[in-house]
Image 1 (cartoon, rainbow, N blue to C red):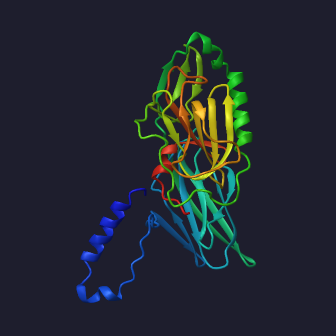
Image 2: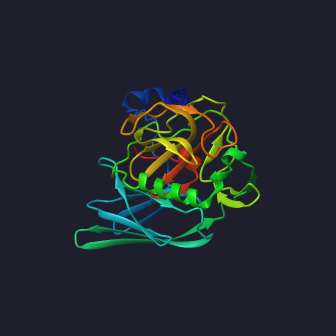
Length: 308
């Protein structure tokens, strides 16, 4: 998505396959991220529901696209929760199909409905939810930070984050660059891991860790608006970015932030420096993806095609 040289190479290959006498009749449109083929399609009453995922797992998500003339108020029901679709300019309607990390594996029913005049269009499909295969990790915090294993402190911080990430706008704020990793370094502790802290307290890892020495520049994963740039107890100095339609990224344990609340940021912009603040045992970057109030596997949004 961020390598135009690859796109140019593909374009040159395409041109080489066109007969010379026919080239003057071909209109070529160069797109950074053309919409891929859907993995599944359902058609009902002239409306088309497209699925852009092959499987879903605990803590994962996929993209739905609903297209058709005069469609209004599309919505979906999945895992006991109703969600609305969003629209990108004059394109079709889109929605994220979200699986909480604690959802039970197995077949689950997806229901999508929309209005067209006085009629209602309905789609139903069984979706398999697979295990996230989360690992178990044990950590020992330094004595001066051992108090941060307190479940009461953790619950209060989650409540605060839920409040911070509760009022996203109805339109995407990301652009054609999509989402990328905040650092180029290797990932370490994975999303969703079950953790035992100081030989007793159990918790979950709600994001990914990446290797980083102290004061390494951290980049915004996508364009958006800063909604938090201050200190939290467990996550230390942190930045939260709203990317629209309920999508947020969070960057934690920073030594310094370079942005302020309300500031618009671009994809790849430096938003702060890595550090060792909060519930941390050494310098690194911890980052999280929150979508409509659920903590999800952020690597999936880096790989997923998104409308912009």
